[in-house]
Image 1: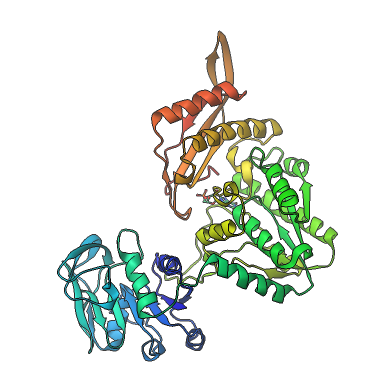
Image 2: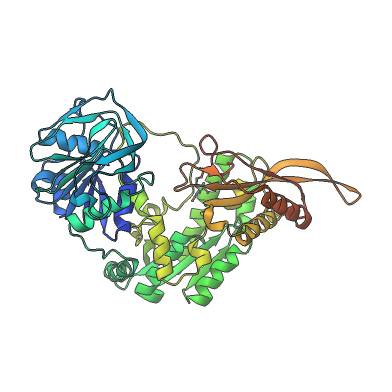
Length: 513
Ligand code: XMP
């Protein structure tokens, strides 16, 4: 396994993903974690991430010294290169030679890092983002690659197996970067590619059995990928000691609740409580139009209803959650201070403390794409495994600025279903991060046949994204949009106008509220 020390780069998680993609287990820890613990992790190789600080500043981050004495290979990336050089006796200067974006690296010498990927004498594209640069190398190092503004773009001490690069191999803009990282973790650090979802499944089943014993576990299902995969995995481990609770708030999409029930009850035979609480949620939301109040109302009621159902099961000591690795990684923050709440996300995070239950979180080590791979490994249908994300408050936040009623929910559901149907038929579903319809709080005049209509307008939204943090609108061909609009207006009673939302995030958000 590989240890990644985080110096606060925006893209440290990508290093971890590339290492996992190479079939090697790794963990990300802040550079200033307890060195004894980091050492006890017993990594076969260590990667030092990039970061926003400058090693020339006072009190800036350094790697704990065991990193260089442990006798294992070390790979420094960007800030990681600079701190490595500084700590081993080289020199770093604050740059008047900033380099951001695409650059060419010229390979000066062969290196174990480049083995089978880059040849001496040739140039390759890399992604740079640095202000400082190394100006003198520590003993034992030599230059193996140079770029226009970084005479030490890639350096190596083959004997000690220390490598460092000024560019970012973890981002897709460095086309061969993943292969360099694979060389480091497999050929140089000697890790075998045994991190597969089949192996993970076996190990996790044993872990769940060991943790739970003959106790009872409750798992909340949402219809999404994470909770479904967690539930099926846990059921495989402990069978009917697991009960799933599906709180149906009546704000789901067309056919979604039925799918959850039939998949778990009929296909998997997992004990499932399906609580239809739509009346409760609709009365709680009656007359409310403020987005934050709606979100909080739904979140609170959800927990109340879930707790009520969980109590009925009786005697459960464990609560299962689909927590993922990105929620667990402790991030290095240099900005300090709390960040602004843009939207209060609704999930069941507050539940376990309140219910005094122990957590079972079998997906804590996984990234989203690994959860999907595990879902496929467990035989879950592709329609579920590849599903777009869907927010906890559901359709309530897609009826913005107006009171939520059953009638409006039905109109929105019908329009959304037509839109998704056309996206699937065009083979675009998997190219899109998220796509949905929004029912606008405005009625517009139309003419259908010989008659006047006065109905709702709806907006269509589709974005590409890798993590939901930033997003761009999806560039549908105009004839596709025209086809969807015609179908919605013809098939959905209550809508007579369709618009397409072309806002990116930032400055917009993905959902409308
Ligand atoms: P925004 O609208 O903030 O959404 O750009 C980013 C991603 O988060 C989803 N989202 C939520 N997910 N509970 C969730 O579980 C919520 O309350 C919630 N609000 C937004 C949104 O669908 C998008 O994928």
